[in-house]
Amino acid sequence: MADTVLGAGGTHVPSGTAHTTDQVTAALAAIERGTQRLLDVGESLDDASVRRASLLPGWSRAHVLTHLARNADGLLNLLIWAKTGAEHPMYASPADRDADIEEGSERGHRLLLEDVVASHGRFAHAVRTLPDSAWTAEVIGREPMPAHHVLRKRLFELWVHLADLDGGFGFEDIPEPDVEQLLEDAVQQFGGRSDVPAVTVVVDFQGARTRSWELRGTTSMPVQVRGTPGAMLGWLLGRTGDEALEGAAPALPVWL
Image (cartoon, rainbow, N blue to C red; front, top):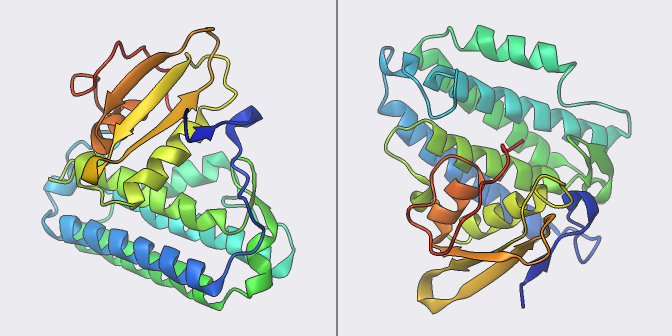
């Protein structure tokens, strides 16, 4: 039996409503580890290499780094919303978001990294100073969610786009248990979509531990696809093929 079955729309509802200080501290520590790894890879680049293509069509590495900085600021806006109760969306508009990324992508290598560091500092400060009661407040990113899901969103963005930089870090390099959380969130984003085939996703973790999830698609009999955490995450997100997976992996729709 699969560990996780999705609800309509793929919205994840936590088993409890409280989010403790220890949980927030642990989540922020994971984010800071991911940010440091991002900066380590960023330091290996230079003004020429940040202009080269990332794994995302149409985006250079400079676009990816700028997006990660603006994402931190956008998620900070959601924490302000949770703290104040006043609506504070991630971005003024999709057009403004895209314009900010385009503008920032023209910066040099050093300024790009300084932007990542500064935006992370603002986000981390907001996390550390958010009242405990605010973590259960509802905010709206792509969908309504409790404020503590902002932490999951940031970790997802960091690890996935670090791989997108194509700078020597791949999906197989994402540490456990972070990659397990990312897999869960990736599967849930497919939940309830009519264009998703029915798939049982089986992942083999270290220590002979196995976990599975169901993508409830439009076909009545799901196929089973099995692989390592990195290979499975890359396939689910459309970044890598199915060569490293076992089973007849179906074509998946474009990741949103």
